[in-house]
Image 1 (tube, helix red, strand yellow):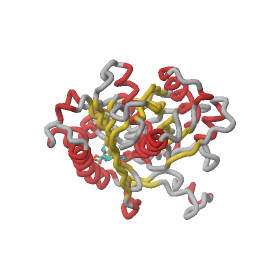
Image 2 (image 1 turned 90 degrees about the vertical axis):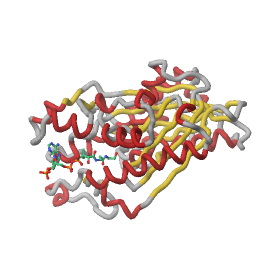
Image 3 (image 1 turned 180 degrees about the horizontal axis):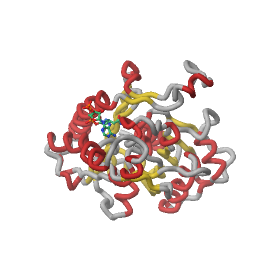
Length: 328
Ligand code: UT7
């Protein structure tokens, strides 16, 4: 048992203004609103315009989280950004965010765990706070996933949107409040299910671009099967490890991957749908940003109060998967 709690002192989110509807997509690839809605639950997604970047969305979300927490940027001890669409290959997106917040000696780094990126980052941030090393840690999930989306591939381009969400984790004297439990997993054997080729193995060349190799590749059906199984396991694991029943969980905030995946897992486990936070219809899958955006919307809608237990589950490229239990 840790000496300190790591509470969520404030949340924030940021979404690009530009909306891409299913009807818009039906003019770009052979698809239609009915297919996308039935197979995914998505009606529209947000797309970053020129000048909007992962770091700019992240910084906007961070400022709102700092405001909500009543914490000044100068009082941050650490910044962690979960992203797979960084501002640049290097330096880290977190360094750009720190600069925008006016900081010049606060440690900052990125975590790459795809759609599990925010839960990985929160787990690490909470460890620093609970150990007593840091008092205020800014944890962000931010993506401009549409920048690596192939808008000629109907199997993937309908799914993704851009955005950012942030939380301020803060030391609290009561360890029964805040982050309570989390587990992190990875299995690189499944990397081919979802990946984006450019990098050391595939330096960017003219030939790569000609074959559209700069964009992500997705085996949707395979990820679907993986996600349904993992989703159920992650929920059951969190409940068992924390000695919780469904009734004691105020809200389940899953990675917004696909309405059908969420429905199938929660109905199998008998989790009431009104306790599951879903906003995939508005934003699509925003990868590492999806959980903190959903959490921020839930907080601002008054869905959570002090003492409530929130359960988070995520899975994504890597393969990676993770869960977390937080007492607000
Ligand atoms: O967060 C991690 C990243 N997220 C994911 O990896 C998403 C996980 N996977 C999924 O959400 C689903 O697998 C998809 C939404 C991607 C696809 O749904 P599905 O029910 O698994 O469809 P499917 O891939 O089995 O395709 C069914 C049919 C195929 O046609 P045939 O072969 O049956 O004639 C596809 O070619 O639907 C066709 N299809 C489409 N039709 C209209 C695939 N994409 C589209 C489309 N519009 N956009």
